[in-house]
Amino acid sequence: MIITLIRTVILYVFLIVAVRLMGRRQVGELQPGELVVTILLSQIASQPICDTDIPLVYSLVPFLILVALELFMSVFSMKSIKFRELYQGSALVLIRDGVLDQKQVKRLRFTMDDVMEALRQKDVFDISDVQYAIAETDGTLSVLLKPQKRNVTNEDMRVQAPDAALPCIIISDGRVIEKNFADCNMDYKKLEKALANAHTRAENIMLMTADKSGNTYIIEKEEEGQ
Amino acid sequence: MIVAIIFLTTAIAMSVAGYYVTRHEITKICTQLEEVIQTGETEKENEASLYEQADSLVKKWFESDKILTILLKHSQTIEINQNIRLIQNFIEVENRDELLKACNKAQTLLLSVLDSEHPSIKNIF
Figure 1 (cartoon, rainbow over the protein chains, first blue to last red):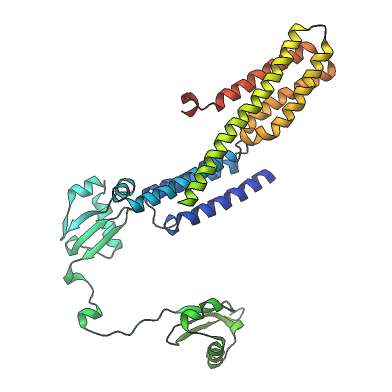
Figure 2 (figure 1 turned 180 degrees about the vertical axis):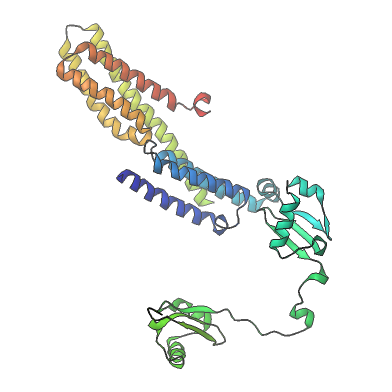
């Protein structure tokens, strides 16, 4: 049992390091190659955890090789467009000016249900509203609506909107997060003033956000039993 | 890119070193086993020498076993270990015939492990 414990810890650390090295996309939107590596890594990691007959080296070697290969492929994909197209595929236009390109749909082996579902997920319910729909290499569909179906923007209305300041967390669960002070022009003096205005103390606050314009938002902790 | 090269080099170094260490350790034990078997077959009167050689073989195996356990499937080393322990028993009870039989079996097992570690088409696929 101790062997299983040690193996699990070692492989867990290796998996975390590998996923961090492969970047954020590995966790979210997966490219074909990344998906393969993820599936293989999880399989390789789980086998020696469950089967103590397999030496740990049998897992570590393919593990290192897979991560190295994935990193190499990323570098080659960055440097060569041809290689990138070969390795990751390329984006394909499925709908152009409201007309479905049936050849491309067949090529991707999409059903009409798949296309309609992907459009609905983009809040589009009528194909004729679409100017361009592009199937991305990670399987998602990007949609550009026809001009008459797009939302009106401030630019269209010639309205000057104020810059939106990004609120950052100043207090989380009673703890002051000092590293965010610089992002929102905050210091302890301003924080004390904001807390005094709200008639509260830092330890009583569940969440406090602030932006560069000096706006603050405070959610106090609920009393126990409330 | 540097990380990839380091990872790949490490993996290759581990694989190659593992292969050669396995080969070296198994060949060493096999040679010793061969000597024990030959002594048993040719010098039938000199039993003391046979047990001495077999005892040295057992000690060498337990040294090699520490390394081989990291490199081989544990079921393989366990099977060979069982045979070596039999050899150890036959040395203690001074049973020459059974000792030679156990040596032959251990040799066959080691050779099959050596064969399975060889990077041949048969083993890869």
